[in-house]
View 1: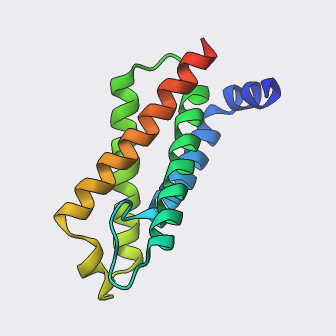
View 2: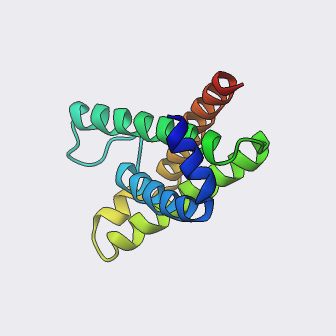
Length: 132
């Protein structure tokens, strides 16, 4: 683990840009979290939520390693930006399809943003406490 941390610190810009693209793509895949879509069943909702929890854990732990001295407000704003970028990517990925009408409603956008921000911030705080 120490070798990975030193490698990340030495090549911070590269890992930041790769990590940002990776996390945005992951967040794109789980939109909308916490809400059922037309024809969706409870198994797919559970799998989507479990994947969102895993993504939140991944994001929180990566942020602690990449930004060890950043305040919680900066991490919150970073997570907000990542979540919004993920939704924009998902919108353009499904552009012109009927599913955009069902996915991009105000309620689903708000629920998704709240869940993803809570998950990533909770795991960031947990990893931050563990690293201190």
